[in-house]
Image (cartoon, rainbow, N blue to C red; front, side):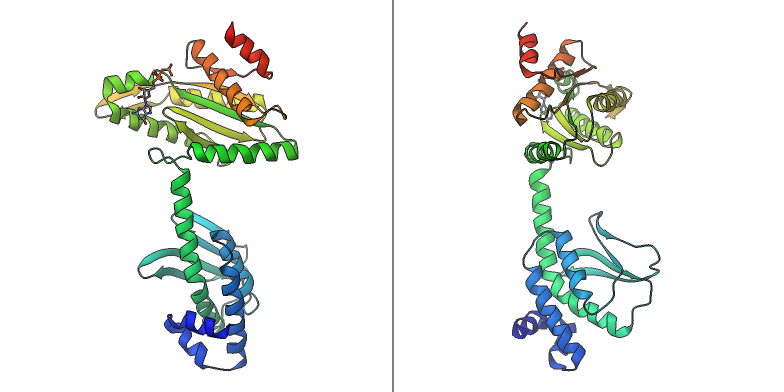
Length: 313
Ligand SMILES: Nc1nc2c(ncn2[C@@H]2O[C@H](COP(=O)(O)OP(=O)(O)OP(=O)(O)O)[C@@H](O)[C@H]2O)c(=O)[nH]1
């Protein structure tokens, strides 16, 4: 193991001294670095990697808190009463790996700084792999035009949210919505204007929702939102707020002011139905909203058969 650590780390200048020195701190450091490296190789999740790093490093250095910021995404948090910090901008062969900061109530000593810098040598490659994995997952699960999550992410999240709502017996609601007469926008102002309008809609949705409300572009001009722990009444209120916000948005594109509206279907999971029935009820409610004249919100029938019978009439 010490060979692996020495070999692995000798690529990093700071660690060469560690391998040649043999005082007791160095031996403990070598041991911790080895254990840490083994554990860091067990996951690609960035948050987990950082927790492993800090957890193992605490065997040698008291660390009260940490944060890692990469592409505006933050893991960890500063704790109250921790005025001292050690901050590193991490790079590997010119690849930026974010900024990591360690917080503490007391100042870090030189030997503690040496320990942390040495251990960072073990973190750097697993962190790079984790960040690449995270980027790949984000790309696979987000819609490239609007930046919101895509249909694949929706399928995954619906599965997860339905399981959680069933297990913890809380309400789960869904909004299913699309732009009214969107074809006319494309036909009148061109496809680029249509694309920009979709981006604008995604922005309005995000500006009008909580972070915990999950928004997805389902495909074309159809979007969905999953609202955990939200009853029908609450979901309806959110839908109405969103519908009004869109209707009040004057969208500018190449000298044109384009107003647009959306129609929304609301459904609340009944606790038993399968996912496709839940989705179909939200879709049916959207259809009802279109049928009622557009720029409307409609609530799905609780009973699937009743909804289908009414649709057939
Ligand atoms: N610009 C652009 N247009 C898209 C995209 N995806 C789908 N569309 C267009 O969206 C339009 C959808 O038209 P329809 O299904 O008739 O719906 P609509 O005109 O909104 O009518 P209603 O939904 O009934 O109000 C079509 O013209 C598609 O070409 C996209 O990514 N960008």
